Amino acid sequence: MARLGRMFTGIVEELGEIVATDDLGDSARFVIRGRVVTADARHGDSIAVNGVCLTVVDVLPDGNFSADVMAETLNRSSLAALAVGSPVNLERAAAVNSRLGGHIVQGHVDGTGTVISRTPSQHWEVVRIALPRSISRYVVEKGSITVDGVSLTVSALGSDEPLGRRAEGSDEPLGRRAEGSDEPLGRRADDGDEWFEVSLIPTTLALTTLGHAGVGTPVNLEVDVIAKYVERLLNHKT
Image (cartoon, rainbow, N blue to C red; front, top):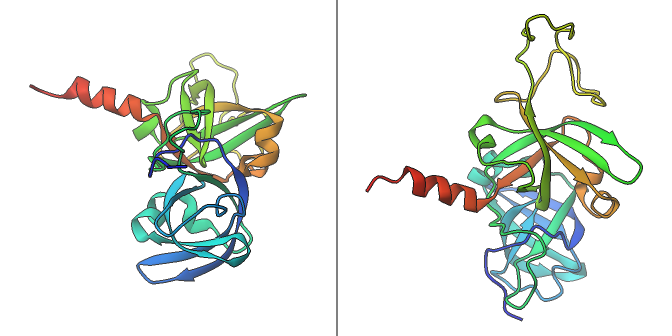
């Protein structure tokens, strides 16, 4: 079954685990356990780890594989925070004959966000994530976004008043935080106050890292590549 090199769908195949890390100076090598994704893996194959496309260096015993992570990737994603025992979302590159269950995902992280609140409901949980202003323009309500390699639908968008400001005539206390958030007052996400929300169903909560990503957890974000192409075409000068 042929696979499409570096294209993914954002449908996590299994929850893996970091079993070893090795600091190589200008890079790092991870050994990752993933019995499902290594079932047919070979040297040079692509596997998304928390939404970051990595290349398999070696397929090892006990369902493990190794992958090298360059300094650029460590600096631009949350992979630098991984340690032995950390759970990770794993997905093999999409197969030619498979259905596109999520959306087109490249495994190229556009930025990192931060979980700022979690609001449980009876059958799902709403997670609010702060995102950098530099990529907020690509995110639209009901559109797709990849969070730690999980294809999700944006259920809401918004922004909070900057610290020390509130709407004229408002009784809102200064330093308000999102309902359900235990983030300390007087803090907000780096790079601004833009946020989006996703609604996680029980399957996503149980089978991905997002089920236990607490307030303050950094997450990898990849916006819909189509939005970036559209912007490029609109701004192109002939």
